[in-house]
Image (cartoon, rainbow, N blue to C red; front, side, top):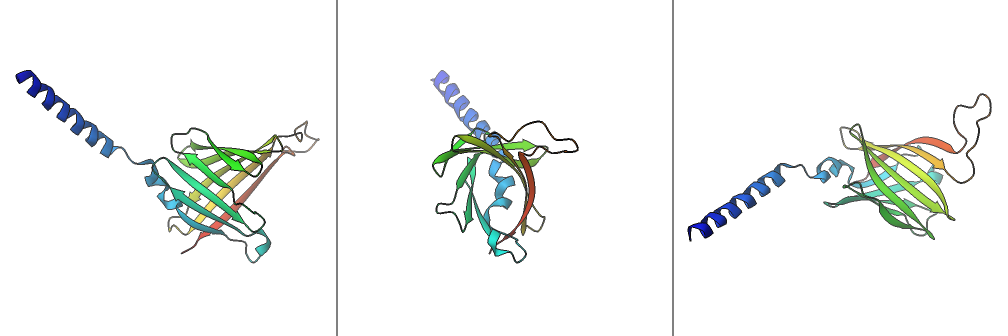
Length: 171
């Protein structure tokens, strides 16, 4: 009986300690909560490049739906908090997405397969202190035949492009 009681007390203590330790570990979604919501691209009057992003969270991932007027089916990309790759349907192909952490920044990397050729998009996401603007610094690398030796005076490979986009939070 004493042995059973000691074992029971030990198991209860172990459960309590593991719950306390788990409660102290921050949820990965806590730092991503500011990203959640509907964001409209600030196009300064140019509606031809309209884009809306809907970001949702779960305890295991965050998801970005990208809505553009020309898309029949908006891409939906999932980024797992554990850093593992996620496979997403993309048109007739697929997109492999992963979440990276670089010096505290939230970075997404998505490899789109277009006609069996890859294109890599890296985005660094940040939200202003007021929570009203989402800035996306994007680098696109086309990896199907455009690489090569740079011409004299060129500093950037012709297969790489960068852009910065600012989205406004919708209410």
